[in-house]
Length: 150
Image (cartoon, helix red, strand yellow):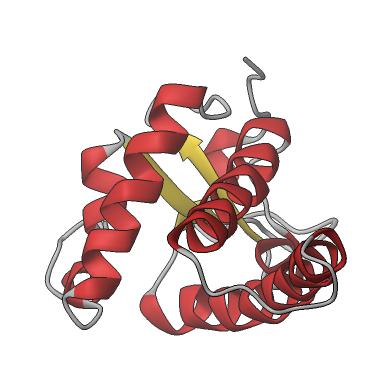
């Protein structure tokens, strides 16, 4: 597990910034899903497959995408663009179990119309349901060379 530096220079991320990162990550995921779809069609003799197995593979690939970035440096590609990082409450990168809990809570939150993310607007620490469930938080990183204002 990696310990992040400059923990005093970060602050909780708000909803607009998180949504921006989510849009970026969705575009990257669409490209990954297309690649998986091309491979599936090639393996299926040129025919498209809408089987539960294919959808399960897409779900697993999506989890791997997020878990890889969250465990590695705390930032997906979209989060990098918006200067966001997900970290444990202690300031470490997430563990695999935390990633799994976070992913499941995110799917549940999205299935309820994003209610778990709208929660950020009423939580005093700007936490979403995935943050709360996985004992993590999403923070904004300062611009290079700048520190958080006092």
